[in-house]
Length: 280
Image (cartoon, rainbow, N blue to C red; front, side, top):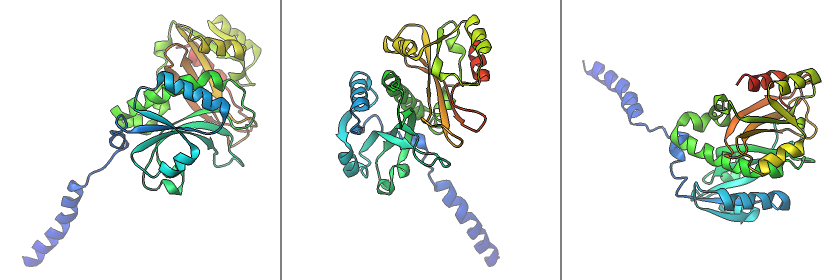
């Protein structure tokens, strides 16, 4: 009997310990975000920094914020008193060098000295090619800042949003029905032929030169959705392309897809993706 009681105790101890364990989810880790200061890290790129600074001053509402330099980021990144919005270079496993510039919102804290990839990532959005950016990113910094804010708020509400990211929270295109849809010419995959483009336009989707599409975003044209894609300048197998459809007035993200570039499939919206827009 005594041996049985000892065995039973050994079995029960892990169960009790397990019941007392507290699992800290990503949503829980973000609960302090509205009270903590977000440091907006200026990289030294005068073109992007100016746009980011203006967008934050005009639009940032989800937390207190301050601007800082890269040197200040290095000094403060180990403190969990701060979150940081910082421009980073994105390099994927099969790429020989970083191909993209991205905006990443991360939380400071222990382990940051080991690198930014060791910090808690809240949200990362693609901005432009790291080499020879097209210039379109200037029109899309403001929307991307609002997209980051919306995703932070979604992540604080539900764990599924915190872990799944933008693709999960922007998969419903039903609300774009009845809106003006504009696809920039450079956002279309080169394998999409002119007949298909003609069908798109006959179906009510406008295909416009990049500068005309971007002008609609700059003007915050009402009731309009504009495309934006981000991929490396020399996109090859192993790289990725990001495709977005963004409301020009509200900056709501209605479509977001990250797709792998292969020898057969290059960057840009594919015909089946564009057909989905028509069938919305």
